[in-house]
Length: 633
Image 1 (cartoon, rainbow, N blue to C red):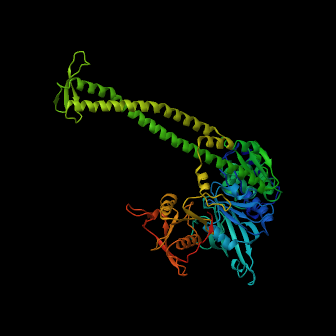
Image 2: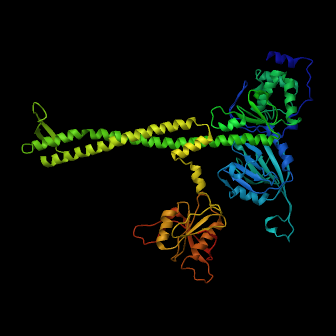
Image 3: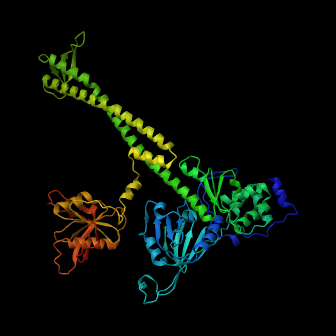
């Protein structure tokens, strides 16, 4: 390192490029890093860095400008998928998950992205309201941090147009600001820099958005002499010098700078690296521990290294390099592989957790049975007590709480005391002890028959858990889960999700079934007994229950499988059905009061008649009777 510093200090020092301003070229980068081991530093997390996000932003601008926003999907609480009506059908993915920050185009469809994608969240509703049909005018980086602005334009529609209700009266301009800044990552919808909506809860309540300020401890312009001073202040640590002092340098690119500085002097390595990032055509590639196909086959392997970059990464030359035509394709390949691994690990952990739960139950059962078996070990003593009491039936003397008898099993035939066990006579005590002896014999037989089975089940579970830990292939994991009968909680959630219109419906006896305009299932009881069955057996705690106020009628249940707020339209349609199938409906056209609440507030006290229930809390809505929604069965 002293030689490097002497080279930098040499009087003949010149820079191959003009003094480079980092900010003049920055528009941000993203790269995906998972457990990267190299000679310089161990990189362990997936992260977005400024320089790669810059390359992605430039490429996205050439693709997205001029296209209009179509459908918007929310995945979980942190991710979005936007359909911009591209010819190739690709979706724009935005992830604000601090562990998986991302912005790229993917060829995967909505169902491939996640088990549950939603279009009914508050953010999506506001995004549709403000951004639906808007045209992308620009895609650019903001400020000094990992922030991208998508400028959008919504044009007015003439008053005579049939689309007038869904479009603005005047031209409108909005911004979709994507902040990929670690824990504070977020997606904002702006109008004139005023925040209209945010995907995640904001850390500030300010209504006006401000671009990120430059970090006070980092510099933009770095002449050679300043670079030398930074390296010297960092005690020769090139990675620390770049990462801690130069704007835009994260661990990935600081490590790359250090790698290049080992092949040439730092004053040449820095401008060369920046020129490749900002001036030369990109060289997108995914770096992995093995070819991508092999990585996919062994998705659960312990050695899992994968990352992407828009330029050649010399510090990753020890890894397998797969080149791609575009940066977005490289990002898609990388994140697809990471998502598959994340899903695999989650599935494996869930299976292992369920196996462990079963194992603990069996181990507890084994412990209890062993304790019971030890308690039954006194059976021989009880049998002996009974026999001695019968043998001494006419001479047994009760003193205190014991019967004094001669022990005929003792060669010396001593007199011993046998506990009376709250029995009045020796005969009663003998019968008591014989009963205990019989119980012990029966219990021992039962327990001795069960113990080997339970021990075998425990051994099998331990073996299965070991197999699960060693599985690295998705197909094998699925096979094992089917063999063991274990179903992922997500799979159960998928089954209970809102029914698809073309899905085959299952008939439920005594129930009319409808589907609301929002896709929610509504069930209507036919008779009083059907009402009881629907309310007390079929309906779940978070389903909504409806009944005409003060009039006999059908119980109506609005299913809520996701336990989330139900649209007002679905509540209105369920209430209309409750009014329709009640004696309050007299075809007069008058509105009918309908009580409704979550099913958990509905109880049936002892003594109530068939179909009668009690509500501990409810709301009332006035509706016109109607057979609302679509009839299913």
